[in-house]
Length: 174
Picture 1 (cartoon, rainbow, N blue to C red):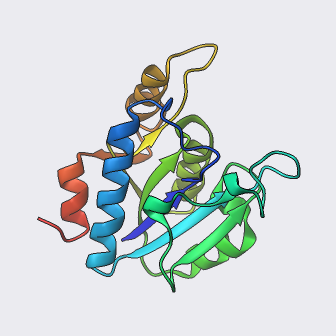
Picture 2: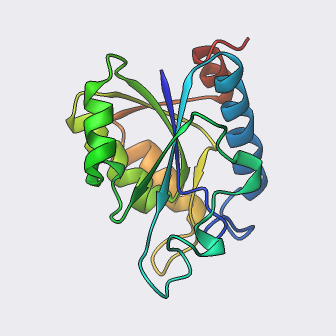
């Protein structure tokens, strides 16, 4: 199992996200469990370019302190929605014998969705724990409806959506 933490950056993580407290609690618990059981944790940060507030060197680009990478953990930077758009990330993942990836982070309808589809296309078994990805309301749907739409419809054939307890078990926690 590989735990992939996407875009949990100061400039995106906001209490306006759907189910914010649940998101934070579950992401922290899963990262802690993975570290305790020596499951690889990989972080990916989105670089939206100069003057975005979400670019290398900007405070908003930094990973939130609750999930700060530990020494030796891999951190990749992407400039498009899918993590696999970064050739270094893509090459690293394709070289792994481990083909199960648990994905958590932001945002459900952008970078999580793009990465889920890219991972699936590359033969990875994708696991999404409930309550570990989120987004904001948009012009068409509430954030809650958006998350449910992806979990229950868009990703139906692509991922295993599991409970937090099941996810913890997969990471070796009872």
